Length: 123
Image 1 (cartoon, rainbow, N blue to C red):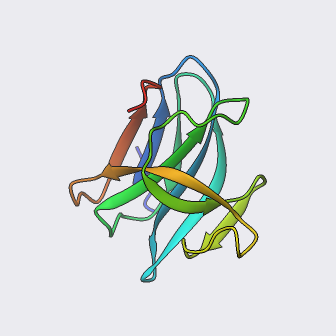
Image 2 (cartoon, one colour):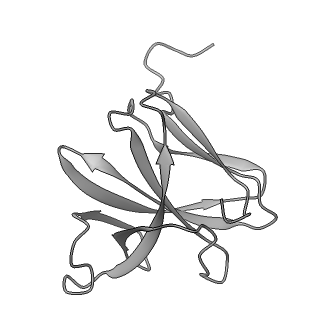
Image 3 (cartoon, rainbow, N blue to C red):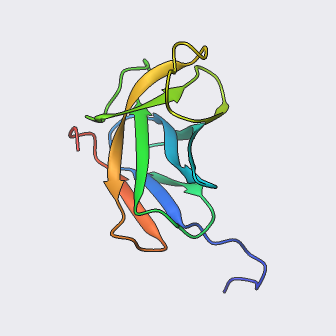
């Protein structure tokens, strides 16, 4: 049973691939897109990447294998860094000193909680 002050995960990613993955997430925060990273997720493990109730229908995921190769076929350009980061805004990544990466769009169907299962099949 959860204590009343225990935070519940609202967006969780579960790794069902055969490899450890590194994960970044993008979503709208205070009216502006923001990306955060990195979470390392072991095989058959889950990680809570957004701890508040979801307020946007879409959440964006970028995942790499241990060698840094992308494992999702994303189409939304957002910014990342090689080390832990929080980046506000998704435009002009290179000009602002960041790396542009293609994030995969997850449709949460406007639910307040969602779990995304990373299968490694290109999604």
